[in-house]
Amino acid sequence: MHSTRHKQLQTGFTLLEVMITLVIVSIITAIAYPSYVNNVTRARRAEVRGLLSENAQFMERFFTENNSYTLDLAGAAPVLPVLVSPRTASGTKVMYNISILASTQTTFTMQAVPVNVMASDACVTYTINNLGQKNNTGTLTGGMTVDTCWSK
Image (cartoon, rainbow, N blue to C red):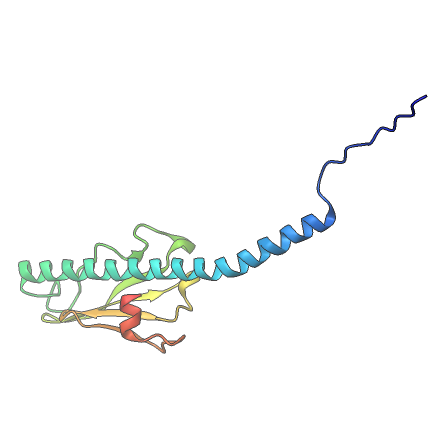
């Protein structure tokens, strides 16, 4: 007589395999997430710089047509075509509020103030004037300079 033993086939994962998988995913996340956040921040900065340049071009066209950067002698500035970054964002999705900081008949300074998730950005407030001079106001952090803020 033959006695046959039936071996049960076990399927699934052991606890050790699951734990090893979780450790690997955690390591990958710890490495990738800061890089992702950095890239998102850089993209938001690039967008606001582009919108500031677009608004500065609007102001130059306005000056060409009106021989002034203001609407009237009282110094009222024209309404900029783009007031937030990203364009058309609202509420908590706004990353920067864009406005004219100062305007005379012959000069203007425009600013982009970070808000919401960008409120603590290392580049703080971006500014640009009628001469095309780019600057950042506030205390730059994280080793950032005006040059790196306007290029990264």
